Amino acid sequence: MGVSVREYARRRGVSHTAVRKAVQTGRIPQEPDGTIDPVKADAAWDAQTDPGRRATSAPKPVIEAPASPTPTPQRETTPVVPVAAAAGATFAQARTAHEVAKAQKARIQVDRLKDEVVDRARATALVFKLARQERDSWITWPARVAGQMAAEIGIDPHVMQTLLEAHVHAHLDELAAIEPNFR
Image 1 (cartoon, rainbow, N blue to C red):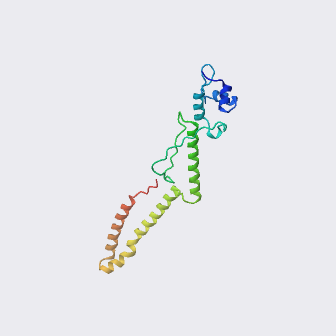
Image 2: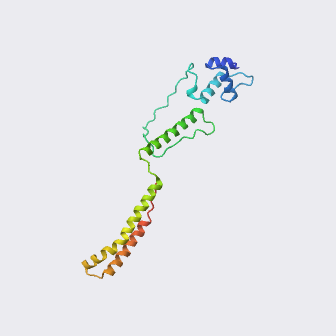
Image 3: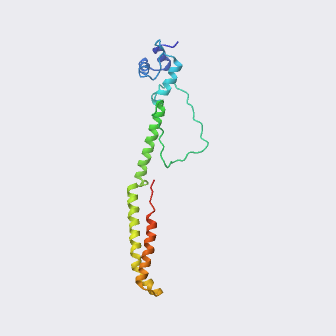
């Protein structure tokens, strides 16, 4: 047998209107006879109520989480946001997930302000531009040095240029197979 709504409100340290709203919204269960089982209702109330909005007259004990055996790093390379909005999640879990997401978003914004975040599209374009300049430099190199090299070793400059171009193009074909990956 449970207690009345007003008696439960008195025990809980809240108004009877708050208890009625909690019953109507399904935050706390009500017995078939209209009374409230204080043990069940307290457990449901604690699980479904924002900790910041709890009544201060009835403080609840704080349960400390066990210390982790390994220290967690200050910064993770990949942000992980817990999905607490799934079925059965308590308000506290959903609130925690929301706060973690906000903190991660704020950290990314600070990193952008400090110019520590690199735009993937700009980085890809820059690498492409630098690779093209390097390729163009290598393609014109045989024509610039073939005459000097041919004179040093005493062969026809055209033969030297043709050989150098063939080897440079083969090497550039090997380098072209490398794909930059910014993930």
